[in-house]
Length: 93
Image (cartoon, rainbow, N blue to C red):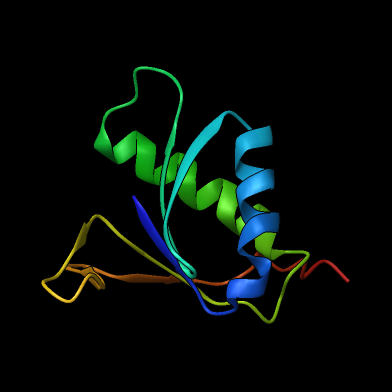
């Protein structure tokens, strides 16, 4: 799965978080990552796992927007279905 992060300065922190949680990450550009998780997960399970970890990380980075996609277009930007992830919020307060 490809992730485009709105603030490239926070990419190293996201990479560290994902790799600490059994993710493997390739940095394709200053704000673009290719991410997957260890194990024999199909594409749908990889997407769910990635979204879960990214949303967890975003809870402590609420101003960041991450766009998730399965492919790149000809301009090396996320293509196809692009999901804009937002932080999970605790509405119990």
